[in-house]
Amino acid sequence: MLDIALWTSLALVVAALALNVYRLTIGPDMPDRLLALDTMYINSIALIVLLGLWLNTKTYFESALLIAMLGFISTVAVCKYLLRGDIIE
Image 1 (cartoon, rainbow, N blue to C red):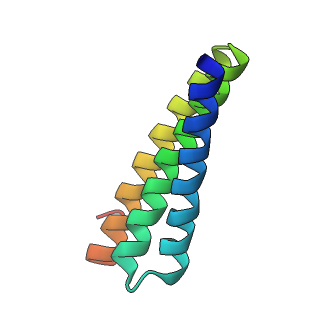
Image 2: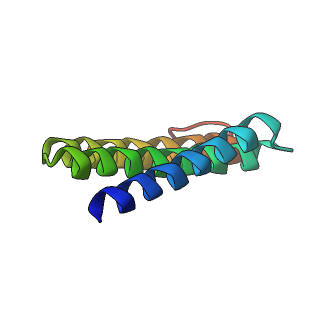
């Protein structure tokens, strides 16, 4: 039963990643592309967590936490750059 749930969630996350890549390349303006990139961070975290569940190890959860922190910091930095033109005031 767990294998079916993992395969289904893997297929849905990969479909979401494909849609994010489409929005990242075809997006009408820069904020849409930024949101697609931020959502790709979240989807990559979901993929790593699914891999950790599938392989039954705790190491992947720590890497997912690290990617979550880096994704948040980079999103904030890019948003500040788009709004103000500089990152550090």
